[in-house]
Length: 127
Image 1 (cartoon, rainbow, N blue to C red):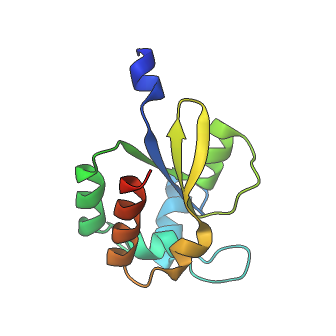
Image 2 (spheres, rainbow, N blue to C red; image 1 turned 180 degrees about the horizontal axis):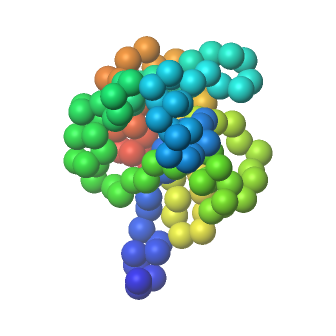
């Protein structure tokens, strides 16, 4: 892979869930609560239904003008190490640098998937 591809920006949607096949099925089907605070995990509530990823979100991700990845919390820690951030979060990765695009509180403030989509679009335009 050339340096252009490595330095191209990538959006990281990091969920406040830990991965694993059985864990994922359980987490998404029951809309698992976050360990801190006991509320429904906001990013999974917006982007997933008990049957999996919402069609509107899947289409949005596919049509983004910037590549993106979805990571569970433990996948993020494995790849990027522990960092002083909260989850869920949307990060912009450029080369080896990570910057916050959308905070946990901003995700929590989104009432509907459409709100999150608009927020992502605005932040991408203003980056």
